[in-house]
Image (cartoon, rainbow, N blue to C red; front, top):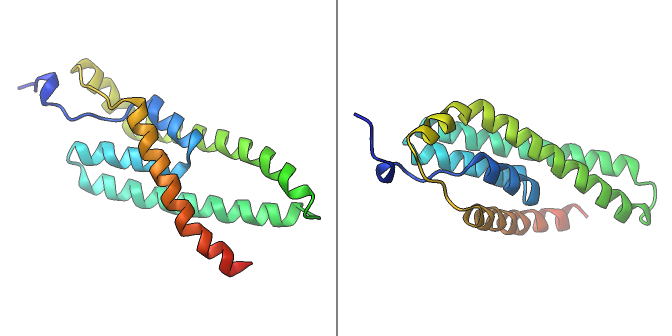
Length: 148
């Protein structure tokens, strides 16, 4: 028996996941993937996806800090390096998120579309990403102060 469209949970679209990842972070996009699995009752996959997202995000931050430390020979170079690197990293994160979303949930989105399921608005997804960015900043700022 096929459920009615109004009985299906709302999910985050692939577009929202990619946009939030680009504007906020890979961690925020990973959370939206997690939320999709959780809404569908797939708790084990949800937890695995969230743990993997956190691990990949931490690995990216570490690699980025090593790269910046090795390539900035003077403090004056840091702002220019930072801006260029931010754009490249954000685009790379969005590409990774879209590929991961297609691989992990692409078939699910196709079925969801056939069943006329509803998606959360992009604004709702952006708000979640913004909250994730604020929390991440609050957690990383004290660590950065300790290291410096």
